[in-house]
Image (tube, rainbow, N blue to C red; front, side, top):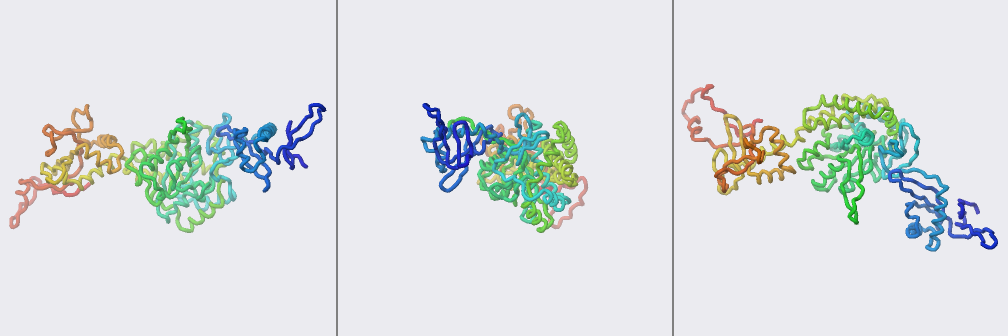
Length: 593
């Protein structure tokens, strides 16, 4: 009968648990059997929360079993969690078994565990938490117990060989690699430098032959399992908004991919909410069943989504979200099907090897040196970016990508093309700027809407058909090639809502900044509206409130005035040759912009 463990008052052998008994009269000691064998084999402290857990082994009729319980379950009331698993802890034994395990705890070393990813602070030191904890000068050991498979697979040399042969030299794939490793810098900026920057969100759009899945695989392969699955770093976008948010919880430096946005069945507003929540690094405020505020999850990382179509086309005309989600469209990520297959096949077997060497390189620099490098990189990339009101915000984010490329070159001797990566980012911004900014986009949609609905407007005082409702008036000046339109406020707001603009006042402000809004000279009362007489509208004698917009071009077809009719050429009549003095401007039916 071998002894497994012995404490001050108890011992556990292969036959069971025994309590030391001392005879009060004789003082003789003996062992009294309590239960089948049960043993405390490990004590864990989760450094994220400071909580303790017991790992317990016990014998059942079908052999030895293991279970892990929270330290708070070591009470007579809660110990039934082991009873239902088959442990011999019947009610009358519970108190003594707990006393035995508590004594065993005092002689059991406490091992550390963590479920957070990325940058954390533990015992007043900064660590990068991955499969283990990494820091500049500490060897603290802690095992990852979270939901993702970030264990190393295959070998480091093969992973690096694949990068050098199938990624380096292909600018798009080099960019994909940088997107993934940029997560470490996003977390560093937020948690170490204590400067807020949104989580970066990149959407890779394209059909199945563009290699977007291969790009996602390259992005996350240095961190963990790139094979889509329950514990992979590549997850499906087909989930609820809460589930997609929870994927990011407590992640401060590991990239996450959400694949196939086309699978999402959530509506526009929920999709916008998810993207905003991702970018802002904190979950929504929620109450528990007792109306107490639940703890809110935080994160700071890089998030990559993929899909055949545009993600931004699925949301409304929200300028803020369009400045936070960067779409990489029309890029050919792989040069051939063979190229794609090699990447996916090899990186599905060799992954998780990039974190430790990259973090080691990063930690060779002081925080102030990283901040200075970020400032310099921001200034350099902003010089190449087109002018926009989001230039500073976007420049700071893109600078983290090129900083990542330089750190990758230093760490792995890859010789990534920094200029090529920067050019791809700048080109993305050039293509996105017109689509993103609300003012120009709204103006173009208003022009299109007017062409379709011109029958509802008085045009140069020409009456509207009695069968049509009146929405406003237009003044078209062919000589100046200019159109002024005055739209009733209720119609204007309805039109913007139908076009997906969530806040009409933002649109008015942007149109005003473009100089195309027609306003009252004294605009103190309502700086965006102007009064105009609209025939057919009650109480319009002194004018009604409208929103006035000035558009280039006489793009609406108008009837000719009597004077214009007299000047039209007639059959059989020889017309004088046009001169500068008598030449009429050409009639314009469609905008020539």
